[in-house]
Image (cartoon, rainbow, N blue to C red; front, side, top):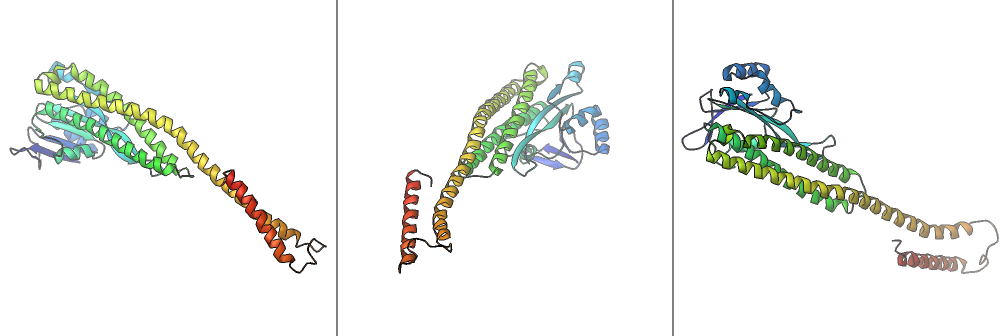
Length: 317
């Protein structure tokens, strides 16, 4: 799907019907025919459009055609996206987003629609000018870094909820959900380091730093990315330590239940033993007494209460 957007005089990004100079071309999971059209229309290699559609594609930057004679530039960065793992638990992954700039337009290529791009279209974060291609590229990168921080905070809130549940849990579902958080942090750590390498290259490229405002914006992007890296490393260490602790908590909760059931079974067995003995067809103590049944019940009750008190003092309950 190909859509065209352009910043109007009032500063709003509006969808337009056809290609215009200074517009933003958004390609979401383009078909082979759409890929051919974009390649010919924008005079860019087809590989530049196909690469961001590969989920395994790593972050990279292509400035060869900028250095020779400006035709186009390519930046591929990893962008976070909310997902579900195979068991349905919340997980965050990353998918590539390709940003191609030409003399006339800027093109983004993604495998599926991303919340970060939807926010840009709705202008929820800041002012955007689709005609200022370099600044627009840097603003998208800033938005991507912002979303890493946003999802990291969401992960921590989710982890705190799991922590409350695990304190009383005896099943594995909470641990599976916790494993999804660990995988998310691994994805984030890998993606952020890859993005950092791209940003470092952009810092020394005149194509992105020839103007003061672009250079300052790029510095802000680098700072946001570094903050996300630091948060990811910190939370990875915290989650790594808590994982073993939570496993021990669940095992301890199960042991407490088993101890209670075992103690309760022993107490219930005492009346059963007495009843079994006095159910035998042989001569037994008190068998000739008028109040034998009452005496036996009182004795059994006494033994059961004493045993219960002993178990309670030993904290078997």
